[in-house]
Each structure stands twice: as structure tokens, then as C-alpha cells.
Amino acid sequence: MDRFDAMQAFARVVETGSFTQAAATLHMSKTSATQLIQQLEARLRVRLLNRTTRKVNVTADGAAYYERVVRLLADMDDAETSLSSAALAPRGRLRVDVPSPLARMLLIPALPAFYERYPEIQLTMGVSDRIVDIIGENVDCVVRGGEITDQSLVARHIGDLQLGIYATPGYLQRAGMPGHPRELGEGAHSTVGFLWSRTGKALPYAMQRGEERIEAQGRPLLTVDDGNAYLAAGLAGLGMLWLPHYMARPHLASGELVRLFDDWQMTPMPMYLAFPPNRHVSAKLRVFIDWVVGLMAEHAPLQPRPPV
Image (cartoon, rainbow, N blue to C red; front, side, top):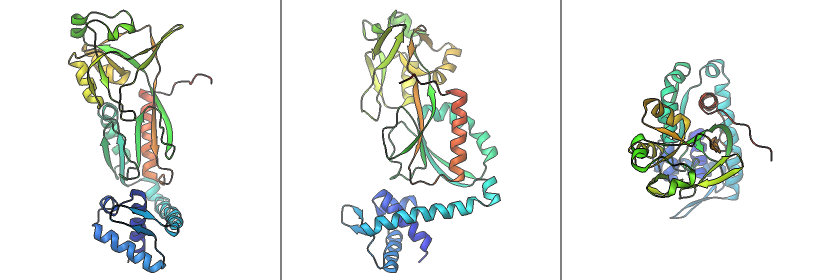
């Protein structure tokens, strides 16, 4: 039995609650993962996991052992990355998950510069607007818009997206130019709705002009749950859009979109990077986080928060 492989398999089963998922994330068969943990239990002479046909639960002894295993695995990773060659050239696989428009318009175009500096990091990038099970899917970190409500994660506020309302010239010619945000849901006007995965519904947007403050939502003819599809629907003239400036900028320059309500302010959308508290921040994860923070500082810098 390779004790390192056995400890890794045990930790992944505890984190995922499944031999099948643990084996998949470690690129081994379920049989191999099961045998490793059986051999580990035989060596320790304690039961680490309670298995039923439906789920796997960690025992009290297993929970205590898991906490020490996680620290030991982190220390082993530290020992490797502390070597001068590893510290200067972080390497290994990194799995991240990011919103689809952010990946398409900011992160992926900037990746050549990242790989020039860190050629030995292999990124697996999930591109979606869904809520990812960071532990269960063995994801090292996620970048998400909006507040992170999961208290089990370590979240870092990395940027604020400035928002505006936009429409195509063709839409405005057909529906007319709205004079006030209240008109978004009136007459011939329509919006494109975005279905937030955290709530399962479209949310209103706070808008303010001087002392006047409203919650604007509009009347969507189409509601989608993907940022790229949301932008495509707006460009097709299906309704007005609430967009971060970085998404709208190239389409403003080309004349495909027109910005509305310039005299109204919208509450910025905070961007967060999150990872599990028991996930060791390795050298490769640390440089990726620093790189994302640098990109956000360039395209969506942090805004001063109003006093509480």
C-alpha cells in the first residue's frame, strides 16, 4: 500500500462523500480507491468510514484522522513547493471555475501572458454561471459575481463591476427611447432577464439619481442563465440589458449598443474569488489568484464602500 495514495483517497472520499467521485477526481478506479482505504483501515486498526448502499459517512475516529491527514498533505505540498526551482516555477494542475463572459472577454485573452510566466501550470477552467460544488467537484477556486453566502468558504473581494443599461439601435428605433427607468416594463419596452443560480430568479437592480432611488427590473420576454447567452439576446434586439462596462465596451465602440440613463448610478456588482478553508493555498494557486486580482484591478477595480 502506498500510504500517500491511501491518505489522498481517504481525504477525497470524506470531502466528496462518495467513492465514485473521489476515484474520478484522483483518476483511479473505484475499486482501487476502495482497496486503498480498506488497507489504510487495516493498518490503523480502526474504522474510518461507515458505508451504506446510499452514502458514506466519516466515523469519529475518521474525522479526527482526516484533520491530521489534510495538514500532512498540505505540509508535503509545502515541502515540494519550497524548493527553489518549484518556488520560482510553480507547476501542476489547477482546476478553477469562472463566469462565462469573464472567461471569454477577460481571462482567456490574457492567458498567453500568464503562460509565458508560468508555463508548467496546467489549468482546467470550468466556464459557467452555475453554483459549483467546490469540494465535491475538487475545484481549487471559483470566481463569482455577487456576495458569497456560503460561510464554509474563504472569500476574497477582488473587484467591483460597474453596471449600465444598454440596448441596440434597432431596438430603440422599434420601441422608442425610454425617458425614465420606470418605463423599462411599460408600453413596447422589454428587457432580457438573467436567472441567478443562487436564487433561481431574476433580481431587480438598484438605481439612483440624486435623492431618487428605485428598484428596476423590467419585463423580460426571454430569461437565460448564461452571461454569453444574455449578451447575445440583447444584441439580437430582444430587450434592454444590464451589463458590466467591460462586456458592453466593445459593442459600444462598434455601434451595436447604446448606453441609456447616463445620469443614473447603479450599485456595482462585487466580484469574489473563493476556495475551501481546508484547501492548501499552493504556489500554483497563489500565483493564479494574484494574476486574477491584477486583471480585476485593471478592468473592474475595487470601489470605496459607503460607511455603515
